[in-house]
Image (cartoon, rainbow, N blue to C red; front, side, top):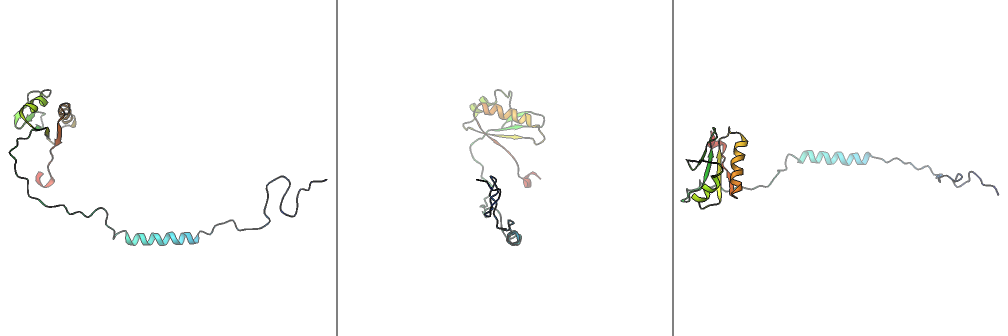
Length: 146
C-alpha cells in the first residue's frame, strides 16, 4: 500500500489541512470607519452644549455674627513669634497644655503669615496634634485680602 502525498480533497501528507476554497480573508473596514466618523462628528457638535458638574446654587448668607465663646487662635508672625489670642506664648512645648487650661473647646485655629516657611507652621501643628486638638487653618478670601 502506498501513501499518496496529495489527494483531491486538499490533504497533503501529514501536514495541516488546506481548504481548496479561495475565501477572501480580509475584513472590510470602510463601514466601521464611517460609523466612527459619524460618532465623532456628533460628539464634536454636542460637546460644547453639555455642561459639566452639578448645577448647585449655594445659599447666600450674611456674615456670621460674633459669638460669646472665646476660641483659641494661635498666630505665627513673620518673625516666628507665637501668640495665643494676642497674648505671647512662652514655649511651643507648653502650647497645648496652655490652651487646654484656658479654653473649654477642642478646636484650635492656626493663623500664619503667608511669607512664613512651611516648616515653622508644621512644627506648631505637630505640637498641637500631640495634644489631640482639632486643628483648623485660617485663610482669607481673595476679595478680603486686597
